[in-house]
Amino acid sequence: MDADFWLARWKKREIGFHQVEINRFLKQYWSTLELTRDRTVFVPLCGKSKDILWLSEQGHHVLGVELSEAAVQEFFEEWEVPPKVDQKGSFTCYSGKNVELLVGDCFALTAEDLREVAGVYDRAALVALPPDMRRHYVDLLAELLPVKAQTLLITFEYRPGALKGPPFSIDIEAVKKLFEGQCVMTMLDSQPFDFRGVDAIEHTFRLSYL
Image (cartoon, rainbow, N blue to C red; front, side, top):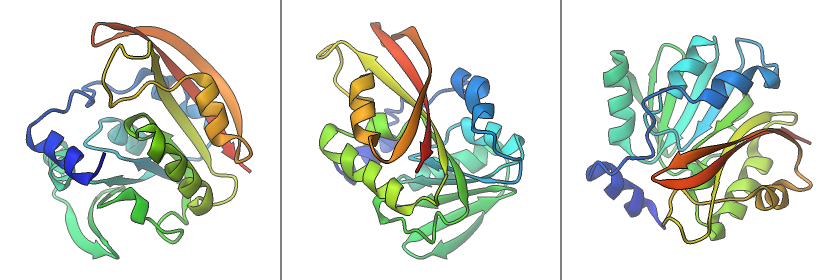
């Protein structure tokens, strides 16, 4: 799975992963990270998620990264905020109010890009990556994020073979194995839901980096 796959999804408007409502677990459990309003929150593979707006309304500076420039442009258009556009290293940076979205490959991020990050909101990143890319992603964040950064992680689990991802099914044991030795993990919630006509479970975790 490469960049062309995701760019084609946006071009063809195959964006069923985009939620029109604020994520219920974000609203319910974000406060468990105990971040003050002025802290920076990182949203990987952010698309044009409305969750960005909710985090912004909590007083956070939101830093997102997204491969599709069209998605970022649509975010600001729907928000009705004209963005400032600059070049920031290898990324094109769209910014407005307290939101800054980087257009480019998340694997090109550096520690300097994330130096102010205190919290991470991951609803769409880990589940979007196939198994052979997850380890690289998890190790990269552990390397780049400041010490004691925290993450609210939301994953899906469904019967193997029931759907062709992304998003991919990741069970609890797989999540534990990925982050073992890098984070203190707290299970916050597991709720069944119907996902594209398939019985699934949505898991919510709080991760505290060591």
